[in-house]
Length: 204
Length: 204
Image (cartoon, rainbow over all chains, first blue to last red; front, side):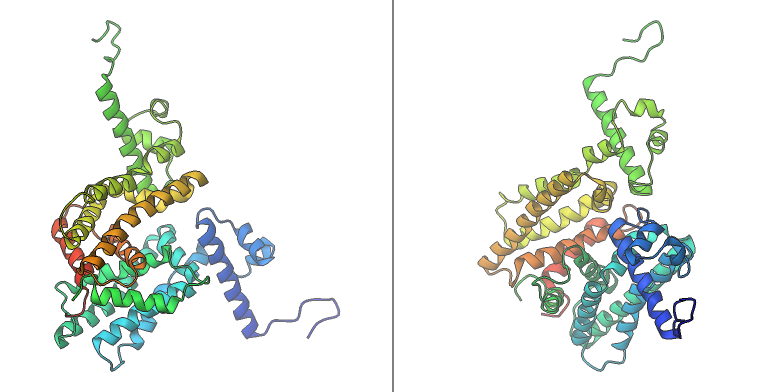
């Protein structure tokens, strides 16, 4: 595979893909830490041990990197949520799963979410609108579960749209305080949060 | 008061103060819109119809403006919350008031909160720590109301600290979707949010 001139072996399709993923992950780490505006191509290259020139093989610009990654969190949320559409459990179970999945995905892919939520203002207008569209799509899934639960008599929600926003606010804000690793059992906290949102604070 | 040379009358102490407030407000409007990093002294001066030189009479730098304003939202929240400490109502009433006040203050002083929550990373380390300290102080008031409600049998909260974070997340996130003006009755929405957090989604 190598050549006499000492060139690197040609990457297989798979390893080129995973190297590409590594580049995106490193870029998001740097964006998350320094902010999109504060991060430079040099920072990202240095995070990878690349030269800037080598980095341009994978990404055309800082904005290209942002564009390649910024839909991932919302797309992952929608994909997970859609899996529960065909789920035959109660609305209560569906809601709990939606909440837990959202929190665990945010913990697992913290950098993605920080960049999407904080740095989207640096996207071209069209992409911001597309992001909002996908965000509405995700909210609709939550709202539908709440409406279904109202119908089945499990839930008692006056305004499912506002309640969806309240719930997603509580979930998105976990980015500020629920850190990965350490001695926190993320799954247990996710369950507790779901329970708080379902049952409220007041004693029944 | 004027002079023959056409100089402006000397400002009274009060009007100098309110002019100073106008400068801070304009600065926060520009920060909120463009982000701290994107805003320039020229932008702020132009928002006021000042020259940059005139602006420097009120603020020493962009960071000085940030430092003069960044504690205001959290201090206002703490001040309002402390008023309820001596309030003799039930924990349920106290909690509802805390929630409503928080939401209404965010609507009224939207720019303050956007800048505090988004741009605090541009503060010197000591000020970030001070901000965190005041944030903890505010959270402690919420947590205490929850603990008191548990004791009085009004609430049934397993982890008051985590629940405080969930509640404040839902409240802070209203900045993203609850816009001032328009045809939304902010007070009614604030009441609805308080009710959702108190009673949860599930039917009792």
